[in-house]
Image 1 (cartoon, helix red, strand yellow):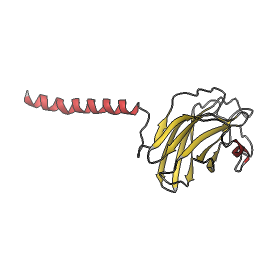
Image 2 (spheres, rainbow, N blue to C red):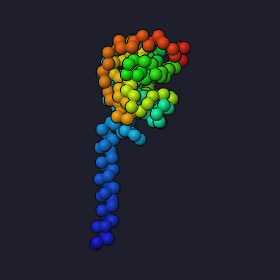
Image 3 (cartoon, helix red, strand yellow):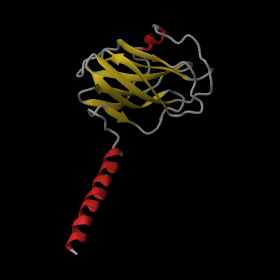
Image 4 (cartoon, rainbow, N blue to C red):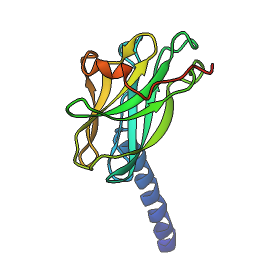
Length: 171
């Protein structure tokens, strides 16, 4: 009987551990260094909304994985890039999206290297080819994490005309 109780305890511990891991994963902010963030839906509906951001790498050489939800219908309406801005609105990095994602929503695309310091405050936002920048962005820094924010779409709107820009939409 005693050996039976001993064999149950590790199984129960495993079950509790797995339950806690699953519950903590539902919290939405977990990654190799605590620098991933998520949101649930696109509140604007007609804009490209950043719904998750994960960052990996090291200072000066980060890789961003950005999830976007957008009302793509084809080349006439699609999310055509995501970008990283400095806190003062300077373009740090832009990832061009070469085609629409009509049947893949939300979708994730990675890019880099992004040359920022781990404590540098940034903004990650997405752009639609026909409506401009989305209001749902992520801001913060790699050290303390990124969080969802609503941003005035007119902030640094002139960057929509700064290279690199998409050459064309593939489909």
